Image (cartoon, rainbow, N blue to C red; front, side):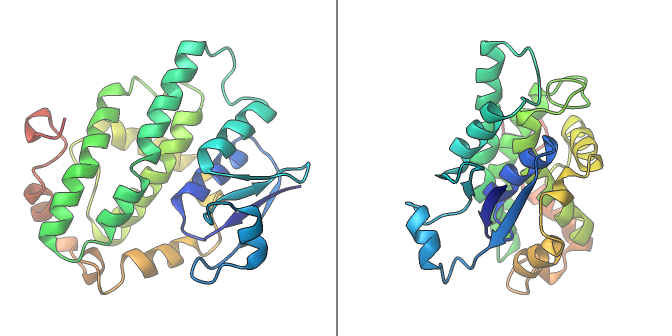
Length: 239
């Protein structure tokens, strides 16, 4: 069976497990502490980072992009009859999501309103770009979920949790992206791809007392969004 070595709230891991869930593949997860990495993990992870995937053949793969590529090629693809040009575009849009995972992490850990507004504006440029690229849906490529949806699921899931707990919406002013988020969340893949206590672990870290979001900004959310320049419209200077 496939094995995934994970840190519970790592966004790069969730992308991998969400793809496994979407393909209906069986796998097991072993969680480790990144502050106390076991030697066996360091022995199979050259960069000392999660995720690591041990294939059914017993080979340890590292780097999430390489793991995603392997899963897509080793098992039935999510979308059939995709041209080479479309595959390349899908990889590019997926990369745009992945390179903003840590941007979102840093944004959610902002300690004050000014920092949150500044970092939200930076993250908002990615959401503005995907807003323009989305079609009629329900998913990025149409009726069937694909690799782009899986890559962005990570950002959209975390944005949903933040909104549910604080009222602050990273997707404010982006109706297509909000509708897309709802469709992806309705699949249940985000929840299935994480531990049973994922949301608790996530909120304990990102909505801790040391963060601005964690100190309770529900009533201030619209003002904070305004301070960030809106970030959902072309004239907000985010595109």
